[in-house]
Picture 1 (cartoon, rainbow, N blue to C red):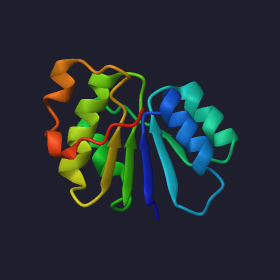
Picture 2 (cartoon, rainbow, N blue to C red):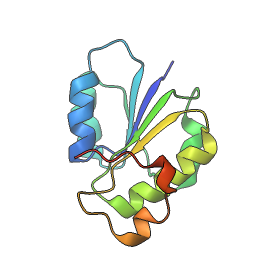
Picture 3 (cartoon, rainbow, N blue to C red):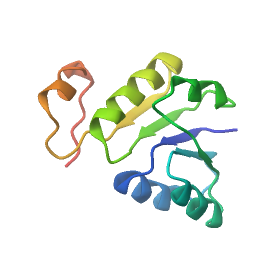
Picture 4 (cartoon, one colour):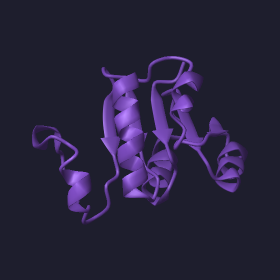
Length: 119
């Protein structure tokens, strides 16, 4: 059962995966880059090659995750993926990487009462 789902495994995603891997939390990673997927699999991380720009990825999730981290290196792509994830899994805790200084079009898309800034 997947309880922690990482969507995109950029720099931030990789740090989180490294911290969580090996724990019994039901971790699964969806990533577009085949080399990253192979590396994760070689480290015994459940990883799938998935095009997150195609909303069909939602259908491949076996069970509703409790925690979703959207963490590619592309903040605009993360916003799109996070929006899809929120619609598909409304009860999950959702964290999305938006860059150190996210553009206005990214920040206005998220209601301020939902902001949790981590520096």
